[in-house]
Image (cartoon, rainbow, N blue to C red; front, side, top):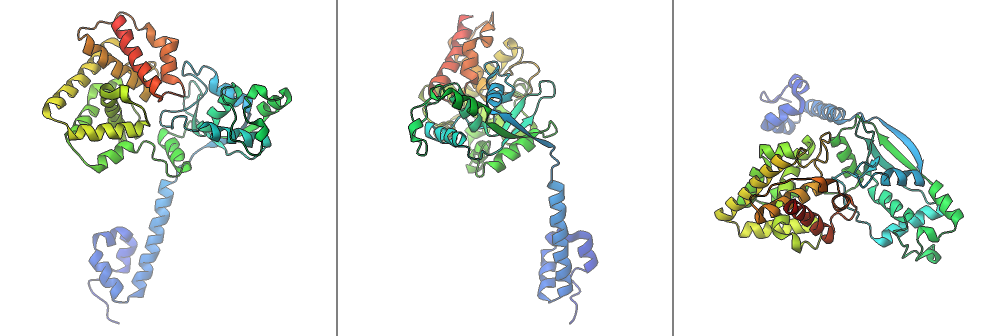
Length: 392
């Protein structure tokens, strides 16, 4: 059979592999149609080598250890110093809120009581000096255990243990309470070598179908407009980046743009927040896009800039909880930014004499509790900041 002179040689295939055929698709088509099996064979080999190389290049060496703790210890690690946001076992910002309803929590406790296998909890040692453990996967289970052991959860909807419906932890026999607290939980602990991107990747892959942190990416992909351009402009503000540091991974996933959207949405409509945050933001974005003009653009930009300047002048740590922290919690940002903007609206010449309220039990409760995205908490934390600034 005659050889097509335009067809790539086996040597070129070996040297360039898939990149060659991406560059010269017509040549590959001619090679394939000419019936030159040897070239097809070479190409298949290169595809396999390329695939193997891609697998190897994306493999992450993740050091981990398997540990086992009794329920009592897990709950203690989660609750101790939680009000100060310094608990050893903590839930990171990128995780979901406490979404399990009472029946789902009860079913989990039922499984624990009758001795069914419990999935591993994934944690990561993320702070070298503090040795805190970030819950990568399993926050719903940990929070359910804490709610039950502290008598906040009333069991309901149980079928196998229907006589336990209506019980709190304290209603169980003392012997059963002790055995429950001694029941062990298996944990896979990622070492401090696992960076934030690895931890988030683990979380999203374990939670199949999870769209956490993709919301702003989706919104950006659905279209553009002057309001989205304003959000992008504000997100790129250098003062904002200084006051509210985020990880490189969060920046790539447009977390900073979501912070800006949350600021505008709560500033203009926090009293009407009564649903899931995603739906609230989506509705606000859609309505604002439809009724956006140059005057409103100027007003919103000015409000955002004045808020940042005020934070810079009066809050030594910006939106961070402390100077040694390296990530900005969403809830704290929302409370401080929106509360500040509302206070400045009432008093443009606002002067701050004291920030003692930042360390108050009320502010910590409004910004660190599990019900952080309930409507009452959203309103309370924003107005607490507003009123504290106006009263100082």
